[in-house]
Length: 219
Image (cartoon, rainbow, N blue to C red; front, side):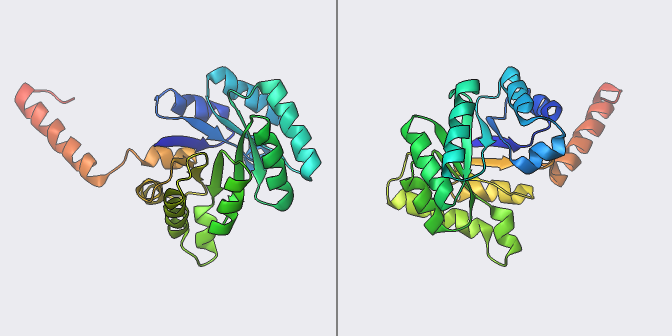
């Protein structure tokens, strides 16, 4: 199980990466825009922090995405850079070309099993089904994760990993792993909430009270 952060705020990422629980970072143009920074400055700082896997999204037609992907790989290296492309005709063509050259490619904006199959056939390292956005359109995003992972298992697909995205609560994070996702990416606010449980809080209060009664002082 791998946990990625879906963010371009480097100070936050640095903080959570220091826990030793974060395995990578996914970014997109919207997150970069919200950061108010140049995307390549963000990528370089993430590399300097030591993030081992950074999804860097490219846009445009097939040739533009291929060219931009190659440029990013040349600048940042293929050890940490993962090129992120949309699940479109042009995006999957770019995926095929870049993956054939040894690049890691994350196919994003996946909303169906059919799209996941095409992404795998295009050489994708990761596919990113959008759980929350599927839910927004009156379908069950977690069922999509289950359907994709079950099909990949039946077909013995090992070269493409399921990276569940667009997650809005801790329950969805846990369920994605239950349903077979290899990786889950989430905002830092959701990662924070993974620590929390009302019974943990109540148990801690009891232990603190008993400690104080036993040793004569509060923690």
